[in-house]
Image 1: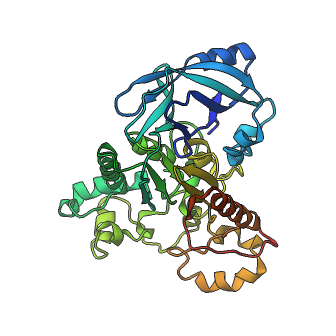
Image 2: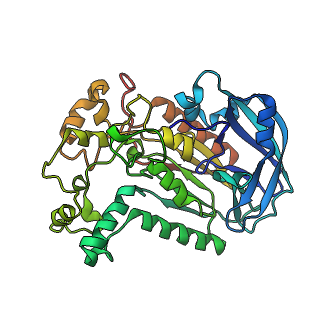
Image 3: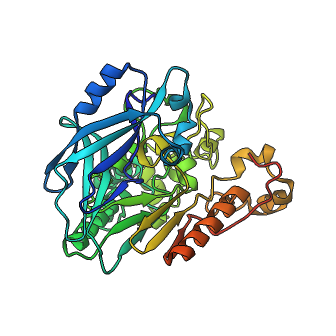
Amino acid sequence: MTPSLPLILWPAPCSPALLGAGETTLDLLVVHDCDTESLRGFAAELALRSVGDGERVALAVESIERPDAALEAHAADALALPDVADRGRARIRLRARLIPAPRAPARVRCFDLVRGDALLRSRAVAVRAPDAATLSIAFATDLHLAAIWDELAHAIARHAPDLEATFLNPRVQLARLVATLNAAADRGELDAVVLGGDLVDHVYRVPRGRISGLGDESNVSLLIEALAPLRVPSFAIPGNHDFRLCPWRPRSYGLAELGIPAARLPVLLRAAGLWDAWPMRVADLDALRSHEPDGRSALAQHLLQVAPVTDQCVTLGALTLVFVSTGRDLLPRWRTLERARLPALLRALRTTWSYPDLEGLRDAQLGAIARSFDAAAQQGRGVALFQHAPLLHPPERGAV
């Protein structure tokens, strides 16, 4: 799915620009393939729109120039994607001034980045109150959002209505979470949300053979829509499911965790036309694939829509937030697996569908974590480290 240009890579819904009260300068990292005049025309239509009350803040373009390394670091992973790095596409720093400066919030305010009435980036900018005495962060993980749960909800409503009250649809649960978080924000009790991976259950709504690249076939879009009403900034790291390409068949899931008794499951799926008597099919392995048919990483939509980096370090008040990705499932890349990890993977095959072994942290990540902790200590800040899976440091040799 090729993104339209110009494309604003940063800030993003789960990697926002953080402004202090009274700050009026905003930098955007933009990828484009148009001339300067057209680019200025695009930039002239940009504005911020407050989430919740809709207040608009105009953006006056001050400069269009090459981005520096610090700005590009905000989108390092997305910049490496073929959709972004193709020849003929340039990247620039668009520096804009906010007119007028947003009013100082009691705690925090989030703004969408819009072009006219069109939404470009939801909750891409957050303005924090000056000298906030406390810092309150909510943490949520394993959202596992996917269209397949709505299909099952429809099947339950039609064929097993007595289970409707106990079926835990992740989309409904996420809507309740957003409402709860907004209520806390309205009471002045919340500054930010951290999403700790497995945001979607799998990237695409359709099997691999039916991916067209046209239209909206992605669960990532569902995630962005579900988070759009959230009135506090959010930060996200990917989990192994965010690397997974396509859905398993419904009978392959541990649906008992969603409130469907195991004894009722075959009857329900048969009635809904979703049952398959085969315990395993080759196509089920698509659920663990981490690359699209054209070779592009399945994480590409996460990087283009959610957050343009898998690892980031953010200063929020007196706290440094360090986010690191523990990677994807090892099973899809067994051919290039580090030899030292083969025995562990073989032992885990029986349970790998539920408890997959992940790639773990690379040496470069460990170095970045150490530098972040050292810098925070020198500045007198606290540190919070977030990752999806338990910490694991595999040997570098042979890793991909």
